[in-house]
Length: 235
Image (tube, rainbow, N blue to C red; front, side, top):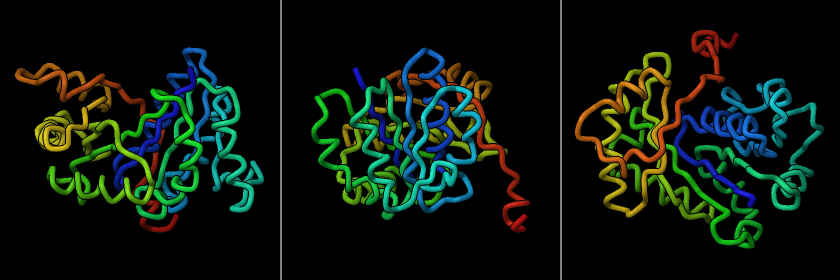
């Protein structure tokens, strides 16, 4: 049965990294996989920089920043329509972490609404190290804002707390009680905890963790290799 996963979240929450990992894992299992890049704002961490990887893994990419596909703002909606019209096993939507990104998703509201029950999941990626995500109240406020713009309802939280190159198991430890509280306050389950394998394994060995606030752990492979110094210097 076709599964569509929408990933939303704040800037720097790790949506694109998780989208890539989900897609690569699905393709490795022999699933027909498509990734829809609706992040029109963040050109630094963009899916289109990984066209070669996606091609090698037989993953189909739809992205407004992928010039090689000849896509423009005019024909982008038709390309996105292939997510609903074609026979994919998994489609992952990577949505920009701002109102404009969420609103780009809203134009497909009727297509999502037409899906059979159980085919659509909307996951809010939470990195408590990012602004507007440091407390349960801030997480729920941002979630509500994104839901309103996207015209979708979040069905699960993902704990992806990290400090990028300075990440450690402590990031996941610090994120756990905050996201647990957000889950308890909203009734939204924690569906995944993600992180680099060594940090995820260390975190999962901690005592006193409740499985319902961890979900299914997903060890991440890092695909988004970037030099922040080069970026800030405009190189």
